Image (tube, rainbow, N blue to C red; front, side):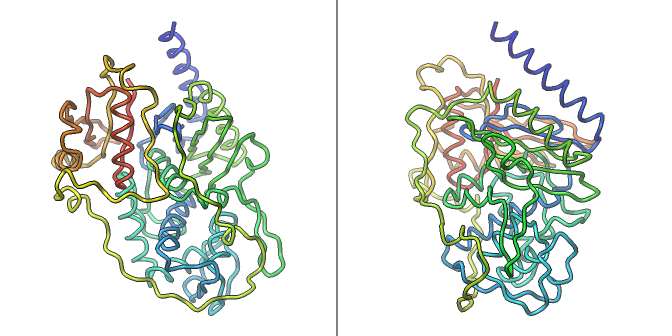
Amino acid sequence: MYRFSAILFAFAFFLTAFQFAEASPKYASIVVDAHSGRVLQYYRDEQIRFPASLTKIMTVYVTLEEIRAGRMVPDTPIRVSANAAKQPASKLGLREGEMISARLALQALIVKSANDVATAIAEHISDSEIKFARRMTRTARKLGMFDTNFVNASGLFNPRQKSSARDIARLAKGAIDDFPAFNDLWKQRYLVHKGRRIAGHNRLLGSLKGSIGMKTGYIRAAGYNIVNLVERGDKRLIVVVMGGRTAKARDAQVRRLLKTSLPHAASAPIGMVRAKAEPAKEWLRVGSDRKIAKSKRPMKRPAQNLKHIADQPNEQKPRKRPTRVAEPPLIPEQAVARDESWKIQVGSFAKANDAKRQLTQIKKVLGTRLEEAEAQTETVSLNGKKIYRARFAKLSQGQAAKLCAQLTSMKTGCLLIAP
């Protein structure tokens, strides 16, 4: 009976996805259970797409890293350069030499999707947008986003700016898990600049039950994109749709995917403790800038390196962040001891040797915790090119969930693969 229900669910989804894909060849989508990281539905989720303004989720993520490090406060001034001021719409309409607060800049990235602000904040943090884009790509690798490359902070068209629906879902999950105090920013529906109220682009906010929003995006080469986080009761889903022909069609597809996925989503695991974080109220305040503090120059910080972690002794535990709590297995280990059909994916690579190297490094990081797992390099064909996926197989659901939680806490990408 369970297998029959699963077949009907899969058929219903693929019929829906196929019909939408027929209308838009750029279409790709994925639905992820935000509690466990389990993929509930997917269609062309690893095919390369242009992220458009979904790029700004990463721009916000890096900005939040600076805030957490104490290098930015709400009134930190962001100076607008000539390069930033000349960026095309969508924009806030800032002039060269104008100063805005970091608080307003952060809100403008999410609500207005302002390209001039994205460039200005990139130049503030890294001195140039090119350097900032390199940091964005390094951060993507730490989050397990191996299909992604950034060359600008806004998402404006560039043939080398690329991602996939699956990578965008990883980024969305990383943003809400790593910075829970700022989660209310994603559902902000308007901002105020120079006394003018500016509304956002996400039409699902306020019209879709449980929608927390996140980010929309559009360029002609990409079509209409969206990442939407939805909470219904104790269930939490991340829905990514890319390549819609219109904003209306894209939003309707989010609703369809949510309707078919929600019954199969897991409730929050019993005993799961979420990271407690008071909302960052000073960053959430809506209104024109009142004052701007003296600028704090960003301090150089070395990028985290997986190889460096791997070289540490196995018994040395990685430093834990106070805002991150690893999620326990969805069900007790004893209840799934006989089911060893789960896998975890720790990367996707263009070269087989890179996939094998990743497996070796992960083994060094986790040590004896992977003794019973089987390392695998699976080969798939994507657009005529071979892709090599690094996976560990023969795991129970509890083992897979626990290992993924540990890897995620170390900023190493991990994806649960259900039977």
